[in-house]
Image (cartoon, rainbow, N blue to C red; front, top):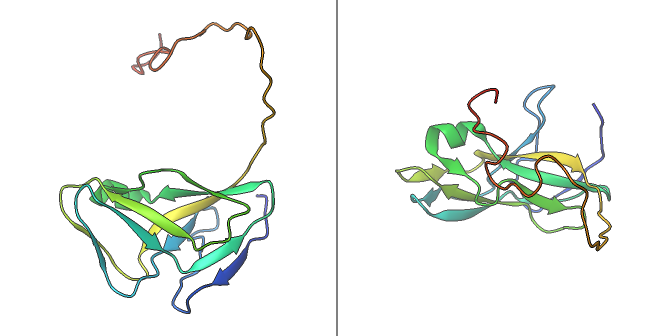
Amino acid sequence: MESISIQIKRLRDSAVLPIYQTDQAAGMDLSADIDAPVVIEPGEIALIPCGFAMSMPRGFEAQVRPRSGLATKHGISMPNAPGTVDSDYRGEMKVPLINLGRVAFVVEPKMRVAQMVFARVARAEISVVNELSETNRGSGGFGSTGTGHGPR
């Protein structure tokens, strides 16, 4: 597994730093750095601070993703999943959570609320052309590659 160096600055002493829960985990858990519980009513969005800022190498991004357990058990997700943190951002890490469930959800202090995965980023150079190369799919849009019910 490739390794990169991430610098972390604690913004509050109470911040729980990102951590991998297992040796082969792809994502580091992000925890809520809040003084009191935050209630997220069904359909509401809350921005949850994590209490730290970070620096990552140029050419990388941090992808912030929902935690599968919160999503499947409580309907807690992220409205922008996955969220992208650019390598030049130096502000506090915060996680927007949305309650897609039917009952209020309580975010407790230090609760693991999301996961963060680091990925390489390629920069695109745009070229304007008169024609694009042909493919079998062509301009077929959403759902045009099959029904998802097995072999075609």
